[in-house]
Amino acid sequence: MSPLIARALKIAAQTDFEKLQDGKYEVDSDKLFYIVQRYKTKPATDKIEAHRKYIDIQLIVKGSEQIGYEPIYQLKTHTPYNEEKEVEFFFADGNITFLNMTKGSFAIFWPSDAHMPGCQMNESQEVLKIVFKIRI
Image (cartoon, rainbow, N blue to C red; front, side, top):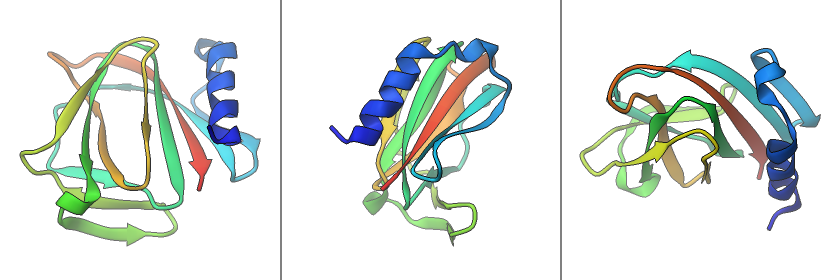
């Protein structure tokens, strides 16, 4: 396992994220940081995102959501890659697999994995999620 992934998982296991404010927390400069997010889930959209420079580890601390997933090689570009925002969007097609994410679950998305976070399961609900960003 990558030492940075191992470090992120150790932080995930040892940190009480409910006590933290929303925002970005640096661990090792731009090599490893995490973002604390609180939001309400929404219906799935018509686009799905991917990143080129970072691996995402998305951890649900409170609430539940669905995260859509599909390999980018199967998708057509919706919005070209934006280097400053480090994101590219693709058209969501009918082949997206939805992961049911509940408290304590996490998913790892590589640059080849498009993902659609924040989707509601049955109805909208409050979620506390941590997104670890690990530089490739």
